[in-house]
Image 1 (cartoon, rainbow, N blue to C red):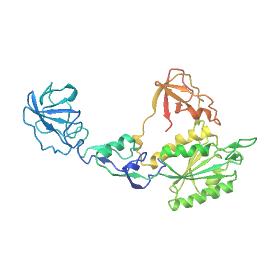
Image 2 (cartoon, rainbow, N blue to C red; image 1 turned 180 degrees about the horizontal axis):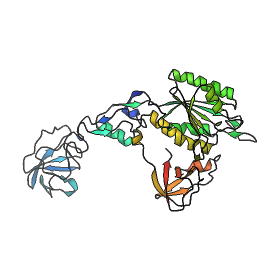
Image 3 (spheres, rainbow, N blue to C red; image 1 turned 180 degrees about the vertical axis):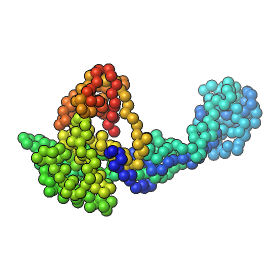
Length: 380
């Protein structure tokens, strides 16, 4: 449901060099054969016919593929050099013997010759809409001649941090805690593909939270933001005001709590096209909610196809993992050698386990014994 709630963003063109981490908004078909010519895979000699061969010179980088070797002759060639017509094989330089400009060596037919189009043919689909640009894919597209790409715009996000007990600098003291969520969220949001516009701090007041939400909702109407993320106030205690504030601004609550621990009191709402994601106030719980509801909604906003979303990897757990009978449990830890190892200090208000974890084990209701497989949700 969180994925279905995400509305794909508009698109924009960006230079290929600035596309890292962006999401393709168009299918990519090869503009040319790659390689465009038949080339040598090694430094050595292009030979024609049977040997020994007379070495006539060298294949220049500027030579076209119209050049042709006569039988019994050879040309020096570098890796990537265009192979002359009638070439029988490439003899690697370390396997060649030269005596008075004559070459001897073992020539295996077509060895170390890369045919044109070996990697991809012109018009072949090489990347699909919804693909995230990695350095390797950027390199392939550069080699294929692309200079610009059409990508989905990054969702613009405003974070509203609630809590009278939050301080932003200095040592925590009795009754007050340092803001850790506001420090973590920018990095997580960037990794998920978002653009953070602002972080605002709101007291535990329904009227102030309502005003802040309404102000951002009006900004959304002018395309200034696409998603609001709030922290704290998602449960139903005396100081939990998000439900009331959402009602005041006529937002529709789509998800009100998820049967998972930690992070159960997470909320997903919409006001027109504006998404509103309510994260619990405990930092461990907040990131668990971000990686479940938030990740799914943001993926949809970035134009990714549900069918392309990778199923959870399955890994064996070194330890028995407990879970309530009625809830899924997200357990922080690391995967080492294909085995999940549970982290330490995993309380919902703790950060030490999160600081050194690489993801969550997704433990089904009732838990699993040691050695059983469990789903693995990697942190970005």
